[in-house]
Image (cartoon, rainbow, N blue to C red):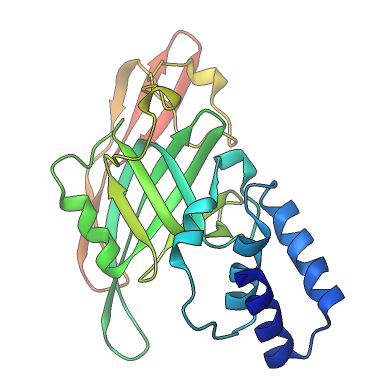
Length: 236
């Protein structure tokens, strides 16, 4: 059995005891809410410990399909489905070695919540696909969970991950289309990832130019929006 092969290889490379490995397996299964087998847990543990398992079964990664509410900080090898709720811009940056990198993000929604998906380098090419738009179903493979700079959970997808638009292996009924209902301005709070509001523009501020960190020219403008509950400044 592969489980025994994995256990023996981990013992050989790390010096861990069989009991310690079993404890790691139970911890990993608990972390993933029981959505993975012993074999899948061992596969992930081996990778995290830097153990080179010959003939590793990459299909095991398909077992780790979870919902957004199940995600915890530092979780790895995440497979996730959902609908695109919001799309943010792609930015470029310069690495320490002088090479150029790219990062883009969007908000993913399932029935349990929202999560920001952060794509790196070649993964941002999906932003140019014609069907990369709000309410499209998307599949994330081999993502890693990290705490975002605003406190929320983010799923990062780099060179070892994959993003699939309109996947065939999904029950679309499990992911109903998102409805964008407007809320009152007075109901807006910092815990909301995104909002839809309607109102009357009562003040429009001049457009300003600024220089980004990468040297490119940017533009920013703001306005004040009013509804029956109050007013708010919007910057874009």
